[in-house]
Image 1 (cartoon, rainbow, N blue to C red):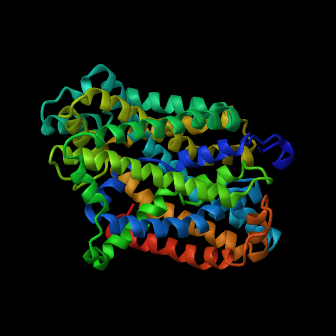
Image 2: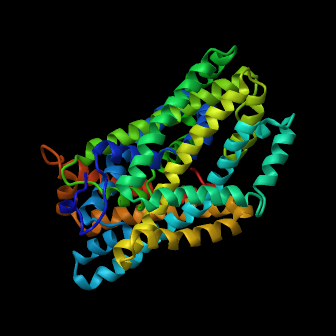
Length: 448
């Protein structure tokens, strides 16, 4: 894909469009798809799905296309991309743009550090699924106590280090040989495993009740303003719109490829992942008569293991589930760390190995320290930094760089230029929705 002639000198890149798309899908498919989307589907039913799909279409056609194009046009992550946009208004403004670009870059690093704690938990539970220790508790209180011990301060040091060593091992190999190859293996396996789980759950007695909860459309739900807020938040965060990961992946994409089709495919597969998770979790809960009322880590590490322990073949189901979740976690974590690593390469001229080691040392030390407060850490980043980063990227790309640059960037690789509809959709609609996510997150204490 990104041959030397298409990027800056000696810059790695994706070797195929498929590899790029799978990497973008890997960055988008994460814990929000698995421990949050099913809860909101169970709460609001088919009405939530309809509104979520509308937001997905709007944000996919504006934000995802925009961030991919911004990265590709500048051949850089947020620091360099923002600097380039500001330099279009005068070279003296480049430094200011680069400083502002540090906000989403630091946000990516902070989110990656917090996320690595979660992936460490997943590694432990995956290993425990094979050994049987994850199923050892006999009641929900026992599962809760087990997770409480793991998620306490310095409670999961070994598996946290394992998670980061695996992640940085992949990243040391570079884009084509590391990130792309890892996603080509893990993302297809994720879908195969979740499809298998969905089929297995579908034949269990009582599963039909779960489908009714999911797809029944209650007109009264459309009167609930929080349903729209949560649908917007779910779509926004699930599509990895934060002005960092999608920008940096876009910077590795060839000028010959159509960003629009890549963005659409990414959004479709991200939605499919969320639906598969819902098709597994909601009917599975229905088979035992349990209600799905809360999500987050408690759902994944307490409620679901307890549920699996009471299902026929629960041991096998748990193994498949946690291996699939591990793949989703690793591919997202790789994307989050790529923005700060690439910043050291592109702006400070670090070698790939030196950049990975530098970020790796910071990541391991800080992640070890924040294990007991990771929930508050992640809330701060997702409420304040992520939507701010996405909004700043929107301002830099559309408002600072301008219409001509935007349409030129998006039109590269297409058989015909992007239509006149795109620029106002991105400039006004996307930026306003990003502002809405930012404000709603502060008001409601997080919406994604």
